[in-house]
Length: 400
Ligand SMILES: [Zn+2]
Image 1: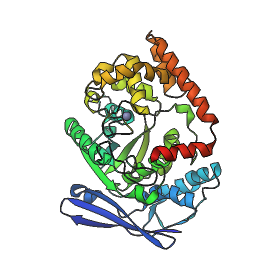
Image 2: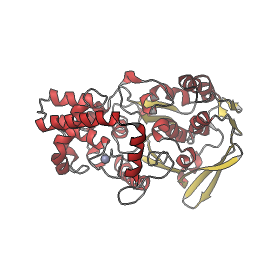
Image 3: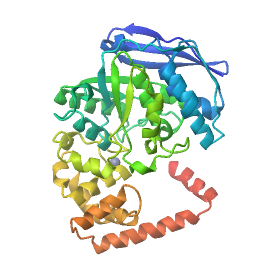
Image 4: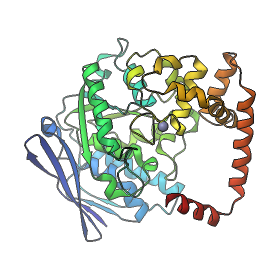
């Protein structure tokens, strides 16, 4: 059983901290969220919705029912209990169809009807901001706030914080980027630090939608609309499973974690990552703030996301615009190898459109790139046929 207590807000000069006791089979964990004191008045302690969304996956995975001291919004209780939790359990019965013991509340809390989205600097985030700050966007859906949540993107699956190559906390470094960006756009920025990842100890990719939307639900007195940027996979591939990256199906789940205060949108789900990158090339601020890297606080140019973005910009003929966020000389030196990666993956999501764009724009695929593709293909086959025990041993040696 997981018992979720009554949250408590403490003020300390410039910061407000929301703390709650989470009792898991008698063991008490303190879950906290820390924000700048100007946002203290928006922390919603009257509803436990945020805790339900943040913790239900953990509860299902570890076989715990949930009990709440504070009421849960009736709508979110209904949607999660009768649809989402059951759907995940049906897909994988090892995830328990948990019982939720709570009182429910129909009335929404008073809200400032703000409109928010996360600012990570990535393709999904910047394209969402671009499309929701333009003149075409209806007033009630125009962004008023950017957010930056420490909810797992800067953590390893075991809950440890990820450090960049200089040994600094990636979360703290990216907050600075978000602050500068917010100043340039004139939008307000809500930064939330938290220990949710240390408590969950679950792979972020499997739960990122729940963590980010759950954190937004702590601010029901602020937001009425919140855009969650989806992963940019093809619209038709939405398939609910507890064992998949939630980005593959977040358009299916966000209606179930919305309530009468906040409507979540899986933003521009109809755009693939390629199409998002393409529209971003018209957004001047992206030339200075695009940050897609998964291994460092600035774009490394070598990780899968950096290579995907660089080759997309190359295929589109727009690389030059991103001189201040990517080392383009380094890219040119490794270009043949990176295009080889696109060629070998040309039938997969993300890479299919990049490869097609090279062809449509009549860009020559160098012969050396084809050789690199062949090399990747052979390595892939060898890796596939190595027994799992040997793979694990190699991984351990590499980690040392
Ligand atoms: Zn990178």
